[in-house]
Length: 217
Image (cartoon, rainbow, N blue to C red; front, side, top):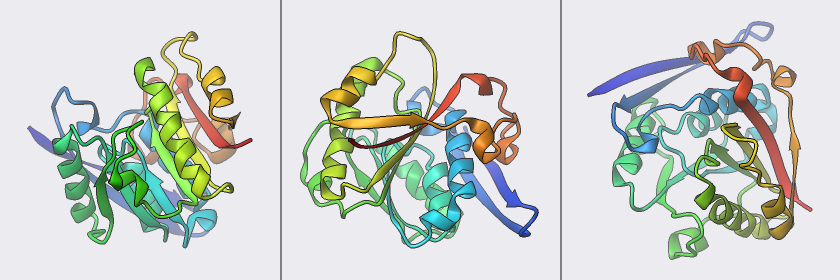
């Protein structure tokens, strides 16, 4: 069953507002609906929209692509990526783009940790996005291998990542050292994301969501 959710981000002081329509499919595949970390990352992008305008952005594990679409609507050039073995997720990314009039966005199959032509041919990214990619510990090393490769093209690139903390043992600290990356945690209150109705999402477990900015050492 397919449904459509509408997320709204606004700045009342500047009278700025965007709406993002996200088609979702009730399906056990990970990327077919919007996970709670995605609106938090989208809010961070909206809050920092002046930084993202005109930048090259790549979203990994895009799923329903809420953060990438917000970046595009804020003036970035965006490429959405998800795993090659999840063609339905890639199709849903395209549906999300069409639903928001953003049909110029490229959708590319990228499997974390695999250095395929699709990954090798990506342009130099200024900002990499990933919401709730750090879900399954077996993927953590491959995710950071992919991010590290993209950052080799641009040492000034930033990886903006939100994730839902499910276990204190699921740490990426050692893997960050392995790939010569560093992370700072950004408090949700710093970008007005410390409330449960971000974009109209009605989040119930906000306290478990973390926001990281990962850069080269």
